[in-house]
Length: 319
Ligand code: 5GP
Ligand code: ZN
Image (cartoon, rainbow, N blue to C red; front, side, top):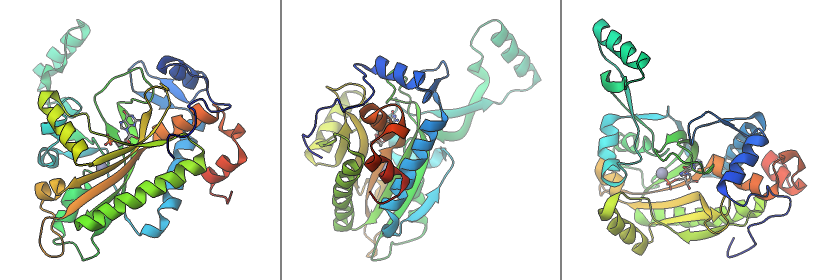
């Protein structure tokens, strides 16, 4: 990992632009357009690749003894409100609404639908918010358990995540799979975790032979105030990303993120360390589809033709 290789890997899908890459992925049957930008079905080979990447993550993290937790892809409104997401990313959130009218309301809804008018007026909030990042459900659970043990905590999570950013760029999906590890504890435990993960990511991209680079990064905070938050996040070196050129060689795509939240989530949810002080947290996450697209982009659209070393890494055999 480093300034490394050129973005045009031998045998890769020759995509000069996002629309070329999308077309190539669709033609190969990996993505199935649904008519909505950023919302795709997945073909069998692509789906198998996503599962292999998750299995590789399992093998890489087998010794961590992380607590495996799985949640449906929505969180409750109270959790969402406490997380602070609306302060930073109101533009990305997706709330779930449902019809709450009576029969008359139903007739009005159908009349509006048939007349081609807006029928959503009768949809009321359900109290569910689509999960924006796989780690969110973890924080209240650890808070409810009382102070962390001296060794802190570590969780392994995976979720479908929603972000309202419709795009024709295939690496920017509205609904995508995210796999994460979350570390909770003392600042030094959490920073050590993040550092070890940065080294692990280096191992991962070597195994997969991807031209990746580690970059200081910031989240897409909303509005003008967001620019100040982004600058502060960068100044404090809170977020790093592992970027790989996928759709645009000039603008590589974040495939993994390494986030240090300091005590933000611990204060919001009341997570205490073993001495009763607000804990610190960090999470490391990867976008499963993005890593899959990086592989298809650099090694070719047919995974059965990839170099043996990469196939072995994905299949769990020793190289
Ligand atoms: P973060 O919470 O740092 O924005 O995202 C965590 C990881 O999720 C990123 O490193 C990236 O790999 C993945 N991710 C973020 N946004 C998208 C997206 O729009 N589409 C896909 N496929 N993955 C994303
Ligand atoms: Zn996270």
